[in-house]
Image 1 (tube, rainbow, N blue to C red):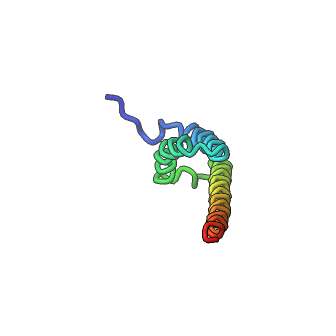
Image 2 (image 1 turned 90 degrees about the horizontal axis):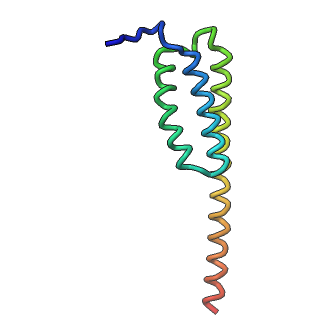
Length: 107
């Protein structure tokens, strides 16, 4: 059985892969592919948790990667917030339309 110690894992590659996957997730969200974004979120959670648990991104040599990952996460949050606002706006329009239709039906 092969054992893996902390020093044999390529954490830089893990962080880079995480960044790539998060960018893909952002692209999926922008194109309203929520199922695809959810699948990626499940995959990236494991990697992000491992990097966080070990404090890898707190190491000085990972400062640039940490900054980039934080930016991608912020972008994802902004995309989600924007889409929530779009949905809320559309729901308001639908409610207004239903009120108008109800008004005509009562006459």
